[in-house]
Amino acid sequence: MNTGPAYPPAHTVAARIEAHFARHLAAAGDLRPLAPLPDAATIESVIDAAFWSSLRREEGFAPKISLAILPREDAHAPLLFERPLPLTPDALTRMAPAVERPGIHLGVWRNGGEGLSVWGTTRTLPAMCFVLEVAAPGLLVIKHGRGEEAVKFVNVAVLEGDQVKVLDERAARLPECPSVLSSLLGFDPPKSGEGDVNVLVELAVSMRAHGRGGSLLVVPATGQAWRESIVEPIHYAVSPPHRELADLLKDGPGPEPLRWRETLEKSVHAMAGLTAVDGATLITQRYELLAFGAKIARRRGAPPVEKVAVAEPVENGLRGVVDPGELGGTRHQSAAQFVQDQHDAVALVASQDGRFTVFVWSEGAQLVHAHRVEALLL
Image 1: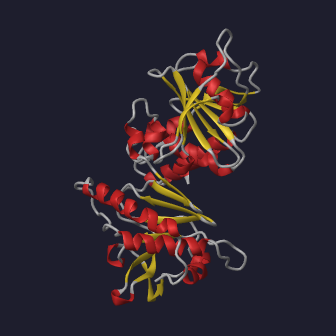
Image 2 (image 1 turned 120 degrees about the vertical axis):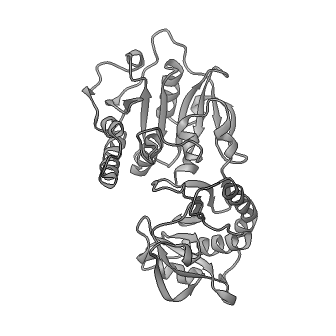
């Protein structure tokens, strides 16, 4: 059990996190297996220990660990410690080098009258299992799985120092919510033939991961109207359109889903890597690659974008209508202009500082909507 100083946000957010898991477990229906409901006291203790561990160093390295609140009896093929470890910052920091690889979770549960302890590790989690990831010093992400072998968990809350961001599930139910946002919030299932994958989500995660910033424009699969908003000639135009990712999705997992998944991930990372080149990467709604390094220009005769509605899908998050210059630099402003000129397009913009914005056109408001989603991509 953690014997260090209290981390106040852990107490502040614990009851709200418990309520989130209670709602989702009650709505899970026949989905099995399901993780047990974590209580607020356990959630608070896990957050507390993880936060103080995140600020320490083991041989000069900051710990990056994942904690799952789960009894060992509910884990599949777990690695069990002969003697459970206490849930303390010291124990977590010492263990971190052995479990920092993706997909390894330290299992936490009550150890009789001794309180909470770490009983071992597991790679497989039941649906709705509470997971806390130490992403960086002072940065914690609380999430849960979707009950399938999806790479991207559903984020529930992000704690960074004294800042707490709890996702606002209502954002996915608002009119004209983009599919990438509703999927990140856990409400939008993948399309038929895509297995357990939402490709825009995976592209967004990969774009953010390369850390160079970038823009991805998604345009209709038919028609050439998008060219009116792109400077010609396009130095890195692709002809014919590259269909590797599109064909993988069209064919589906087939009889070898693991190999298909590995190939798909490589294709996603390759496409996301193109966004690191100065300019925008263009793909169709069928994920055919059209160009990269393209320069965006205001469509001839179109007005400049003057106002953009901004929203962040977290409780008490950003809301309002702002000048596009307030969203970021040239990359953000040009993406907003592109979507204003091309209403059927979606623009995904990653900043070097980790911010991530999805731009869509709102017919109801007759404005470009900028959705800030970096809290969902961690």
